[in-house]
Amino acid sequence: MTIEPVTKLGAGGVLRLPRARVVQLSAPPASYTAAVERYLTGAGIAKSSARIYRISLTTWGWMLTGEPAPTGPARRGAKPPVFPVAAIDDPALPEVLAELAAARADEMDADTVNRELSIARKAIGWWHRQGWIEGDPTIGIERRPAPPDRTKALRAVP
Image (cartoon, rainbow, N blue to C red; front, side, top):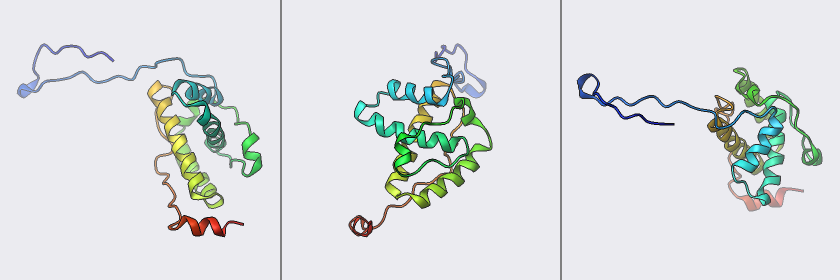
């Protein structure tokens, strides 16, 4: 973004600044999977964290298409569905995504759900800053409260 110098004051002596314009930094990737890979390399995600980020973003890939995400051991080897990253801007997606996220939160522990939501929001924010998408379909999805006493929760898990 460039800011041009203002040569005149606006009405009432108020300085007028030009509006910021979002400019794509690079061409959008052809698919969500490619967007995930570009995020992992372009955002400086450490290799040690990239595996966890990839698993979480694969999970969100299923939910972004309106499908429930795989759970359990199938989750780790799952491949995301193929769809264009621009599909994230579908106006109907936030409502569908909220329902899927709530159902997933009922199946998984709060720490996993919150970590996956945080990772998805970081990636979505990065894609937004690249100019590849316009909105954030995760707005309205709240983090799950963690158990008040984690030691009791850990002992209760079979």
